Image 1: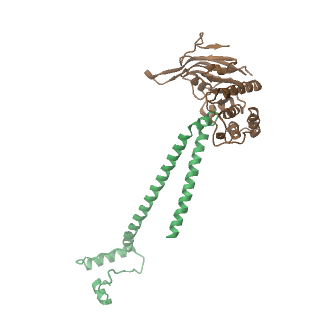
Image 2: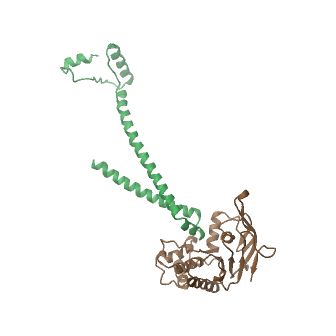
Image 3: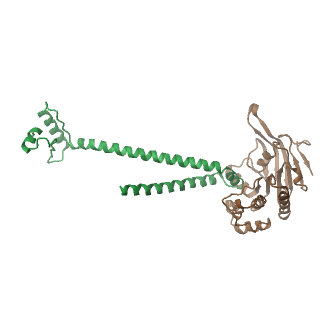
Length: 234
Length: 145
């Protein structure tokens, strides 16, 4: 199994046409290894969410390649992308975005249900909820739990399919500093326990003091640094 | 035998009561009916009389009936169109209010057609409930009047 789980080759994303054209990503190349805990930082409008959308297969680059777990994804059709996203990626959003009509357990079961997994879906979800410390909230409606608990459940949902990469978009952005600290600690614990690759997009570098790598995006289209137009800080 | 209606009224002593004569043919022959009408009108060419075959007579009644049915159908079509429009509007509102959930479902791997099916099924359920309730109310109204 290759050690590189994600590779972006000269990825550009251009929005609009003519005079209104905006180059949100400009010739970005990077690679992420299995088990890495990577932070993507940049100011608002820098292009970090666009980059996350590319990695998450939620958007396609104008040019360049996105290779996820050894497979070039830009030529995949909608059904293949959905399946790949389901199997290879876990998402954690700024707002936990649990489905409010479902219980916490049902929310965590959802990715495996979509996958049509033959495993014991309920048991998998329950195990993960215990791991993230939500054993007392399993059967509660997801709109009846606190923001921190919802984010824990979102992390469990992101992990339930044992994805290649968990993508988190400002996962602490909606939480107070104490709860945010707990969520960061939980994410790192899960990453270490499961050898899980995490890519976290944030505008607040200081919330994540101890990470494997920090990728900085600047000015929406350019990365500072060497020829790769990107600055990578070990 | 062809007889003028005024003569028939005198014979039957019904001066102002009878206003039509029915002629029944012994054999089923539409052509013969047309011949008799022709003979009748020719015999009383100066009178303002009207002669019709049974088909022509029924056509006038059927025309009224058809007109009534068309009106009922029009109301029905209008009702169905309104209901369909209402369902589409409700579904559009539901989709708009669920954009975040749709985004989450897409992010965790649901295909477009999976999400589309959810909303189509929802629309069908609303339609079925509406049709069931409408049929029930319609039948209840019909049998109560």
